[in-house]
Length: 134
Image 1 (spheres, rainbow, N blue to C red):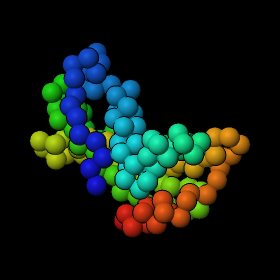
Image 2 (cartoon, rainbow, N blue to C red):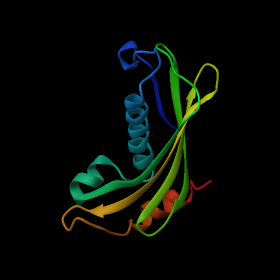
Image 3 (cartoon, rainbow, N blue to C red):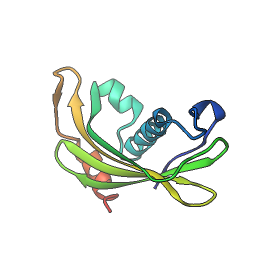
Image 4 (cartoon, rainbow, N blue to C red):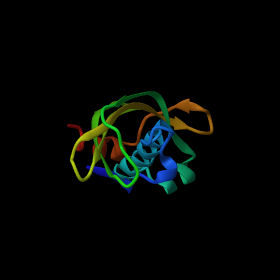
């Protein structure tokens, strides 16, 4: 599933000319929110229900440089959904060459923002996520 499309801008590049790690993280974060919305964790769900999702582990692997002007695509797959935890993998590619530039595996926990504790995902969210595991 495509969860982000964008481009690398010159101001996102560092002194040696490639996209700085700050922007990899930012683009993966934007992909997170598109993934979440696709399984029912929408902005209104988070606001109205006083819920949240907190990343508890994030592992990024950098494979290829991205330069100013490169078009980027992030594809995401859910690896696992449990009662309170979701684990997923992002693959960031150069849309022109189809080379993988970076991967990011994230483990996140569903939270009740009122109690500041983890809580189970609603059944509809769990089922939607289960349908996307793979």
